[in-house]
Image (cartoon, rainbow, N blue to C red; front, side, top):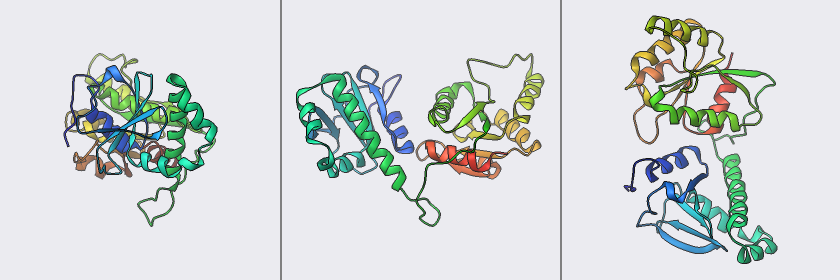
Amino acid sequence: MDLPDRPGRTWQEIRHSVQWNNSIEFVQQDEVPPIPYDFDGHTDVLPGVRVHHRSFANPDDIAIWEPGNTNVYFVTKYRAVQQLLNSKDEIPDGVLAVLMLAGGAFVAKVLWDLLKTVLDSDTSSSTGSAGGATQQRPRPENRQYNVFISHAWDYNDDYERVVDFLDDFDELEWQDHSVPLTDPLDTVNDVHLRARLRDQIRTTSVVLVLAGMYSAHREWIQNEIELANEFEKPIIGIRPYGAKQTPNVVEEAAIEMVGWRQNSIVRSIVDHSL
């Protein structure tokens, strides 16, 4: 299904983020086009909340939650609708009664907390790809993890998303050894830049490679992969969004490939850091 786009935030981008991260997206209504025309509106999930989704929705498709008297949407997988309906009897009657009378920020806060609970439960009960073992929240050691994120500045949104994942994982103490757009290296030419990157990677614990940008920036990513190999630094590849093919070069260089999930990225950093 094609979702409507406009310059800036798009439903397709939001959908990819929700599907890959199994997360809640907080969206200002004026940031996005109108809700897709084939999404039906329903009011039977929670008082004060309208939910938009396609009839006979796939559990991994998106649902758009619209708290009453606000200018925001919360976007989740449709399975969150199913899980909230299944657990509705566990919500105290007092909370439901207040939702029927209140509105605005209160409804948004209650909905956010309920969805977080649903998603945390879904994450903790999900099964891993190896042997069907239950995935647990990663447990970082009591140490600092030095992380180099290989990226290009025209992929800055992807870089910032990874940084947010790591910053938001409270138990992870980490330091960014990469080169953000806001703090570029002071270099005079490509040779000097490679030397500065060498210094950055030399002291890192692990190198993350955003595989989706490899085709457009293969020269510099290859440089960073070579530097990581020179210092025997483990490389973790982050797959591109959606069904885009992962470059073979990144797969061959990486000790592990992960998707766009906070737990997967943090776990791989914890497992492979020097």
